[in-house]
Length: 456
Image 1 (cartoon, one colour):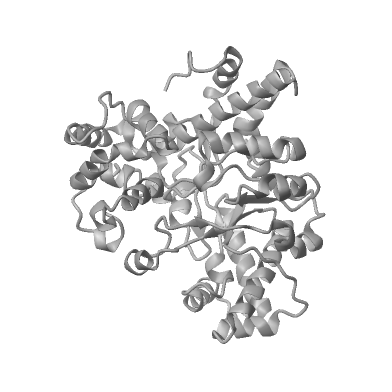
Image 2 (cartoon, one colour; image 1 turned 30 degrees about the horizontal axis):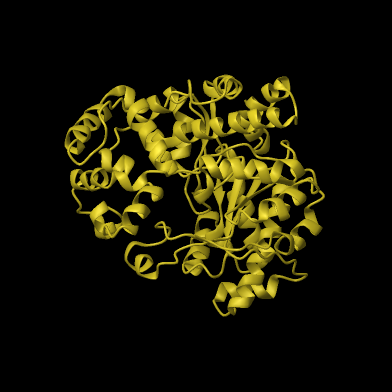
């Protein structure tokens, strides 16, 4: 993983200037209980294989049953050692992928494993990792501190009781782990659990939800509770982007609450609620994230057996210009709103997102996400957005991962990509070394702090 000798002198110099900077992780999916309870991770498979969609989706693509990988309820009885053996025996599948780079970093740098991962070494490596995980320096909080993480945001349902976050705040541990408000389950009437979610929202907020106003009041209450636990952002996901302002949403709310709305009416309601969320962000200061263009749960057999969000996401073409038109023309001129856009449709970077972020004061472009947070994906991203949007309309980097141990590796890969990009900009004559040296820490850390309103 040493950069020496693999980059031009300029790129290496820029990389080394970023290498030891703290990690700001403003969006991700780590479990807050890890840090609240600070117990040893269960075993190498539970740590490295089963929570990582990048890992198990590749293995499933090669015909390995997900239950054999310990995934979901069907995999509850899987032997963790056998899961790790399967992973090791198919390690070659990850050649050429960022997952391979991240995992090599985790094994060598974090877990201090010196031998290569193979079917023959699987048991020895499993035992070595298991032994390390029982040591104090490999407990979650110790790793958090070793990774030099300044801030780590989790992603939490609007219905979450935030017990682990409250426990963390009461513990006086200096590590900063904050929640993110994820309300899709109580905004999107097409969510299969929407009715149950509304009932739970009513219960935990002590609001009747018998009117649109009481529904909005309950959402504001939950946002305030998240802010009290340190939240700086919300997160929203939508496959086909649509926003729409409804002059009188009350009757439609009653229809979706009763479950009598059509699919089109449900889509219109969710489109309206995204604008309501943007207006609430202007009021309370929470940064709004929007992940669009991912068709989730495309494998219905996997959905039925293992549940939602099991790696079957597929990118969709996304119409950002028309999809956000209603939202932007209602609140987009407000400098108080911060809306970070994430896309899986790379064709929209230069055509839509860069021109939009280069105009609307509320917009920032999120970093490459899911299938594109690779070395080539990072290079394509910079090439397509910077000339139109500049650097200061970008949101820096976030790792967006469930795989805690991979966080330093993901930020390291980003910083390498930044170093390469900036060195190429110097070669192109875009700016000199001093400009690149100013931009390096900005892209590594500072833009993320600024975009997510994270105070140091």
